[in-house]
Image (tube, rainbow, N blue to C red; front, side):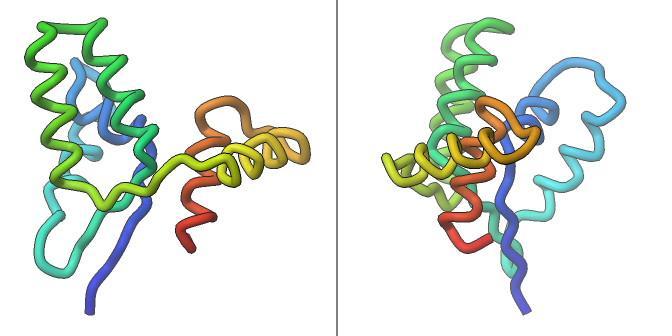
Length: 111
């Protein structure tokens, strides 16, 4: 039996980042990738993590991390339809900004 998960950028950013009480849990989750466990995300996740990592450390490290994310995740395109859904989610509920984009991407991907 396989498991698939749609991962928000905060999980990856926390796993890559500095000291935080959630860091090890995020690392443990991502370490389960492999046979039977597949991670999905919006292409926006890679952009958001790269943007964050470029501000936090060496430029080449951030670029290398972004490339590894491209290989490790099943990525879903950000489309006009996804963006429209994100706007709707923000309109009808408490979700905001990038979280709405990630949620819409997950919904559009069938999660």
